[in-house]
Amino acid sequence: MPEKLNISGNVSTEKRYRSIYQAVIYTSEIDLAGSFKIPEINTGEKQEVLWDEAYYSIGISDNRGIKGTVSLKISESETEAVPGLNDSEIFLSGITFPTIVSASGTSIPFSLKMSISGSESLGFTPLGKTTEITITSPWNSPGFNGKFLPVERTINETGFNAKWLITNLNRNFPQSWSGKSFNPENDSFGVDFILTVDHYQKSLRSAKYGILFIAFAFLALIFAELATGENIHLFHYVLVAMALVLFFSLLNSLSEHTGFNLAYVISSISTITIISVFLKALLKKQKTAILISGLLVFLYAFIFVLLTLNDYAYLAGNIGLFILLSVTMILSVRLRLFRKE
Image 1: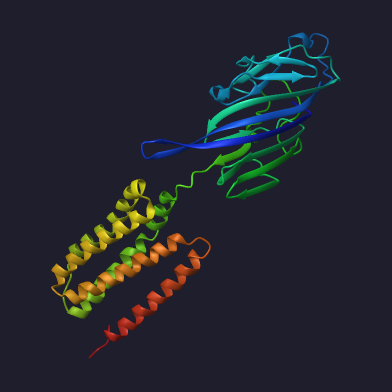
Image 2 (image 1 turned 90 degrees about the horizontal axis):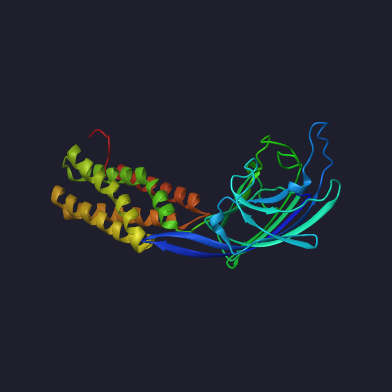
């Protein structure tokens, strides 16, 4: 493994579309530099190291991402890469630089530049005894993953800058070995280019409030029964619950085409309308149906506000639930529930 490995990269990103779905692709300009220190190897009397058959190799998970030619500069000489690997004991795919390696004990500096394209994520393996990696990109929603997190990072609207610093003591493999004793890729790390397509996340968050929707709708129906003296059949409760559940499916499907906010408005108006018309026909009292519709409008507006909040969503949700519980208690007293005449 290299004694020192410095990697710097500038990653440009682009959104690609297939039908209504999006994906992030990138092109990275990578500069690698460092040095090898050829170790003293004692092979025994019946073995020897064939330095004239040695080679350098770089592991790349998908060679299709390589753009143009790649040349490795070693000391004062330069060697062009050939496709594939001479062995698969460390990497499964990559490129190779055939060259003659100097005798043991010497230090060999190297450098190369390469352009690699990919999608969704860019990762590295800390092969150097000291590995330092710096990545910059205009993408403003990175997700850092793997065994190591950046020691320095800056994220703002114009993009991000991240720096990793790893030594051989942080990883789980040595500088040199033979065979398949270690797998360096297990210590890989990198960055994901996350799409901020939040309508799926908001749809999932709204679905988590599903029990709240159904519970308060049923509570409103119970109050309607008590206020009007009408008995609502269990089947009618099931129909109202199905309308409330269908709201989430309608919200998710519409948000793929219209965006979350407009989809929420359309889905909530449709759901409130169908429930209001149904209750008006069922209870035969327009005032009761309007009151229940007003409660549903308040509930859907309240949930929408919670979905748009981030830091204060939990606090606002508890305050709102406290207010709703207080109103429910007041109404139950006015209706004189469970009191004997």
